[in-house]
Image 1 (cartoon, rainbow, N blue to C red):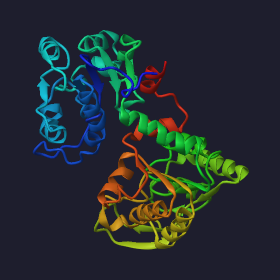
Image 2 (image 1 turned 120 degrees about the vertical axis):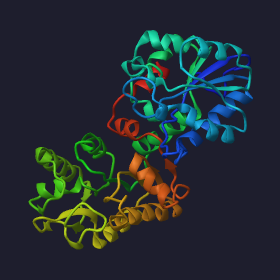
Image 3 (image 1 turned 45 degrees about the vertical axis):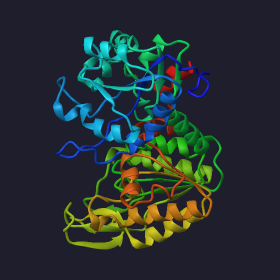
Length: 396
């Protein structure tokens, strides 16, 4: 298979699908540049090898065509600085201006196309739209792991127009390598830590991990469905009643496979969903009526810390509580720090999913874990055992 290391880019135009779906503040400044930084090694390598580089991405979820707040022109300043060059910009991703700027683009130059999702054909996976994008270049590079689970025009369909000239960028290769290390070659004990609000988003992940892990730690809002499934009282905590039987099945399967499931013994509860609410710590299966669990308690953190620090492989997706509120962030901080300590002692740790990555960044631990994945949904689907269209399009 072609890789960007063995392909001859001299005199070629390379169209690269990157993931510049980054958060912007009210002044339209980039507030978290993780995804832009992740794409830089691939872009610089293509420039070094003599390619003229055309970048395409989406930003946000525009509903009705172009909207200024979703324009990719807002990332240009950041990109210029990181690439140490003047990045050109096309006000549309297809059409005359894009064609003209792509045609005159010289080796080593970089052109950023406007938001792909300003055209509904992108998310519909329209072949005609993909063909127009393909006509801008000689070679296609997919480096957008964050959108690899979507069969969109720019992530999967476009590859068919480059039967012999398509490849992964460095980020895609790194993502797959690190995920495969966890899923196929993990050292044991292997512990998965899952949090976040809902069981519904993670049940397939849980089922697919059960025959791979030794320990499964469950926190966040999703823990209350499991606690209720075991007969606990959870007050007005978040529960998906329709998934109680599913949670029971998962626990039964874990028992049969000899997997330890760790549920929080205690929870920090509040009388309303508010940082300044009245709060107290109670057993997680005896939450008083009218109170809701918003974080794991001190005893749970200590139990989880011991399991994490005695693991050889760690996979973390989802916070332990409502960590955006400082009064309910302690459990997430404790888990993040335990993972960092385990990594320092030689464990391999992979962290992924928007909230987990935000937590790792918030507490400045991104360099203290082995790998931080840039793809939340894509990572989860890969762990579920699904084929990612953006990966299959290059491999087939």
